[in-house]
Image (cartoon, rainbow, N blue to C red; front, side):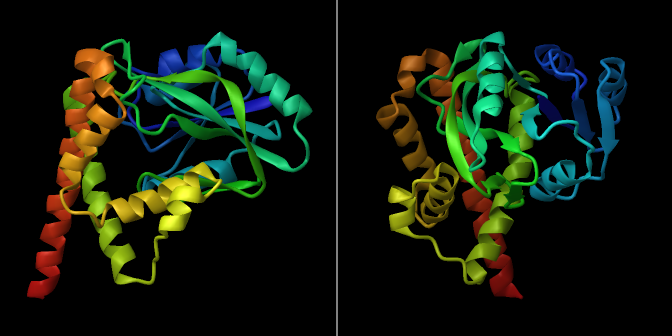
Length: 275
């Protein structure tokens, strides 16, 4: 009834748990960016279909996974290796695809983020993600922090899946977001040197969550003092302090990530002026 796609790059530590959580599926596909660890062997050992492609950017990599894999079913559940599907979500998934109208082509599912085995209930900024789609009706845009655009109605699915972004440690998270910040700075330069327009109206009132977040991000990047604003937003407005030490830590890390984007953007602007 449902195929599963797992995107990987050197995920030998996290992949076994992810595969175990979707062992109910008879059509699991691992789309790998030429890992140099045991990722592929683990996937094949679990009976998953493995396809590999050299990574260029996040959107094109994920679009290639949607387009090139030979899926068995019409509906596809998309996961990262550090995510887990609890048993409580499985029945909701099956029920959704069985009763979905022709107009419905995607479902948003609550993702629960964890740090030190503590759920970031308040600190987590974006809790809902489109992860269950009708094949041929969705595509990714944006090279970094990619957005999944669905050609049809998107509904909310009851239940949740779990995400462990710090499973490889704080150092790995910082290194990954250091890379992300470089890509975000370049993306900001490209969008602001072109005709890309961000709307306050769309950022506030758009009914589509991904579309609303896209405009919110575009507008937020134009505001000075973003790292401090983000920390205040997370700790005070979203009450991250209620998540304890994990909440405070996550807010600080997110503010550092925002600062990386700011200084790297400033560096690119200065380079452009000196050309």
